[in-house]
Amino acid sequence: MKIIQIVPGFGGTFYCGNCLRDSALVKSLRHEGHDALTVPMYLPLSLDGETHPDGIPVFYGAVNLYLKQHFRWLRNMPEFMERLLNSGPVLNFAAHKAGSTRAEGLEEMTESMLLGSEGNQWKELEVLVEFLKKEQPDVVHLSNALLLGLAGRIREEIQVPVIFSLQDEDVWVDAMRDEYRERIWELMAEKGKDVDGFIAVSHFYAGVMQQRMKIPAEKLHTVHIGVNPAAYEPSTPASNPLTIGFLSRMNEENGFGLLVDAFIELKKNRSFESVRLSATGGLTGDDKPYIREQVRKLKQANLADQVDIDYDFQQEKLTEFFQNISLLSVPVLKGEAFGLYQLEALASGVPLVQPALGAFPEIIEATGGGVIYHPNTPDALAAKLAEVLETPSQLEKMSLNGIEAVTQHFDCGKLTLQLVGIYEQIIESKR
Image (cartoon, rainbow, N blue to C red; front, side):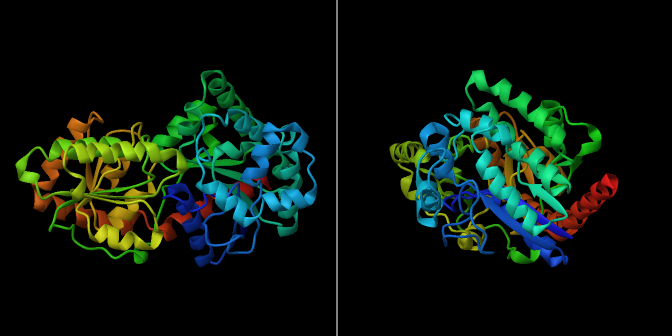
């Protein structure tokens, strides 16, 4: 089966769970003998080169799109200018700038993208459709529902099933200005009619999006995210010193500041004076003032020398990061649809301490590899961290539970077979 995955790139400047999920899926599909291809949109999937590793260009270049959206006279720019704006150096530069991953201020762009052929990006859509015609896939799978505007045209021209993953679209839409939020949800529900199937990453999020987008039950499926257990080096949780880890883009929404506040509170107890905090996951230009404020708080509390912050996130350093932490906590303020970092930690033998929000309780219950707390406040998190850190036997048990659960239930090879079964079911129903 030939499967094309259309994935928004992020430039490689921070830990992007959705991007890593999509990349792992394509690798797993290939391992199972399928002809799987990743097609990047907006930005490169990494900063390593001008093109995707498969030699595929970036479609819907972010700089090109932004200029056309805001300057009508550029919508018919010469082809050589479009090539320049879509070049690797220009897109890599854009990936480092503020706002490329921020919903506020991009409401008009989001709406225009959802309008598809009727939006300002109709020309880019036709270029993508022509590429897909040449590739002749059996299935086109798009990374998230913010790309729904592409579905109708692809389905009409390529005449194959069009499938969408569902993960954290609500975070983007709900951050928009009030006058856009309801309109965008209505538009997504309307464009969802052009889709053959939706794949939610958790049962929790399937329920959220079924309500928000009015998705018929027969079109909605749940397939958890998976990882390749063999790609990790599990070890016992670090004990000398005990270290709390954070892995995600270091911003307010992901709860980095909340964890810093909880760490400061925890350190008031002399029993934990040797405990350290280690954070990685990268940042964008938007995040720098926020991170400076967190560092200021740590300095004020005389704790800056007990915290390690890796500003330059590199995927290849994650094994070392996991081996040096005792547990992982990413206290996302409003919860999350899944959170790939959870599986990466569990596969490495690192237990989780997560808020009772979003899909976190679902994953903790399914793995036995961590604990949840409520409410999502610094005091509650500090109390739960103290409880776990002072019980080494609990840490060890959760570590073993997590390793086993990933192998048994979250192996991407097994989950890929489940996903391919859904593809085949949809293809057969269309026949």
